[in-house]
Structure formats: structure tokens, C-alpha cells
Image 1 (spheres, rainbow, N blue to C red):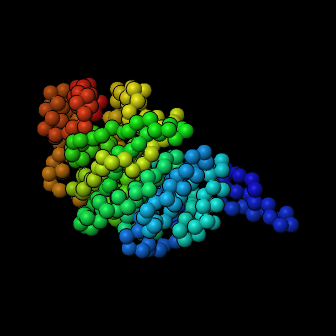
Image 2: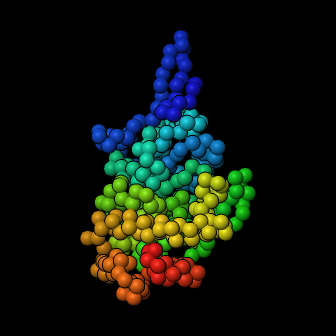
Length: 347
């Protein structure tokens, strides 16, 4: 068996050669690579995006098997792995069956596009959807705890569950906890901050319908988890922020900024703020929000309009308008940074 960038080359009996590769997702054919089938009521569709994740993937797959909620199916979109990721996934599929473990080739445009391609795939139909990174480890109660929150909410209201995380190093040793956010998860917060890690997110079908309305190309260079939080809050949905950790988040060189805890990650975020990245992300978020503006309650429409208009005004009107919009971050230092950014037009 040889691993190729686009699939797996197997040498069979009599030296026969077979190329095994995940189904393609094609913009031209609208092929999605998955069967159009409905999952049983109460089930969770796990949406996993992979790219060269063989080093840590086995532990994540094992944590799926250890869930105390058995009603899950796994949908994997691989963005062109050249290591042992595909063989590991196919072995997992062989163990659990093709109906429970589905694998396809992703769009190859980065992790945000990959996740949104799964979320907005109309052939995936479930009551709940859980996002998964390839290098974390889920606690055994993750899915059941999230589903219990979501089941107690009205089914016709967009709802997102997210949680705090345990931070682990490359060897799996616990090194701390992610920040504990205490202020309300609200649209005025979501406009300027992402508090929900995508690897902890589980959301209902109503949330997904809003994301599908915006489209798979929404906020393509911003973070997909920020977009989910922002879109759900914008339309008056509910965000359940659980202070109890449900995921062991692996901190390594490839995702250090995402830990949001180390001094280095905070310096990097400050740099991105001052070099214009934060403003560029806000531009992307605003364009994406315009696609679902009609679904916003009146209060949020007014907040959105005030935020969108004020950030481009001259100094004094800009500060007054942004203050009136009520935007806030979760910490005092964060809010100080927000004021400074408003002063120099970096929001």
C-alpha cells in the first residue's frame, strides 16, 4: 500500500493495482460525496476535517468510540492528506461500517472552507451537529452533555452549545484550562470577539439552516467558529457556554494562538489587531451578516447598522457610535484594547 497525495494505491493479488480515494466534492457537479439519508431522531453528526493529522488522530477517533452517547455518525472531509491519515480513517470505517463512518475529499481551500463545506452540505441531515478537530481528545460525556442542553431548548430556535476546554501539550499532559468567560454570550459580544471554540461546538438543525442560508462561502478567511457564534447570536439564537470542560485541546506549534492563554498567543493577537487583521475580519463578518440580516430581530438589526456605520466615521462620531452599539469583550483588558482599536480605526 502506497500513500499518495490524492489517495491510496493498493497492490492486490496478481499485482493488480487499485486506487482508493475519498469521493470528491466538486463545485461544477455539486457532488457532495455522501448519501442522502436521514439519521435517527436524536442522533449527532460528527463533522471532522483532516489534513495530515495521523500523529494525533487515533486518540481522537478512540474518544469518539468512548462516548457515553452511542447515537453518532462520523462524516470526514479530508483536504488532501499525504501522511497516514487516510489509511487510519479507512481502518476506522472498516471497523464501524461505511454507513456510520463516511469519508470524502474536501475542497482543498483551507480548514474554514472545509468545515463550511460539511456544515452546508444538504445531504447531511441530523438533529445535532458536532464539530471536531483532528488532534484533540473528547471527554466521554461531551456529546451527551451537549445534547441534554440542546434538547431542553425549543426546536425552532437556533441553538449552539460550546464549552471550556482542558489544555494539553503534545504528550497529552494537562497544562491548564482555557479562559472562563463570565459575561453573557450575546450579539454585541460576538461582533468583536469569538468565545466559542469550534472543537467544543454542537448545534441544532435550526442553526445549520441559518448557516446554509448564508452559504458555504461566508466569512471564508475568518474563523468558522466565530462565524457560527456570530450568526446564531445575530438571529436571536441561544448560545449555551458550559464552564465545564468537555474537550482536551492539544496545544502545539500549529495551533498555539488558538489556546488564547499563553503570553505568546496574546502578543500575536495584539499584533494581528494593530496590523489590520481584526478590521479585515470584521469586514468579512459584516458581509456575511448582510446575507442573514432579514432574519435578525429588530434590536440586533439596529445594533448591526450602528456598528457597521460607526466604524467608518471620523474619530468622535466613530467612538460615540461604537459606544452606543454596546459592543463588549469578556475581560477588562479586552475592552481597553477595544477602545484603543476604535481610536485608531482598527475595528
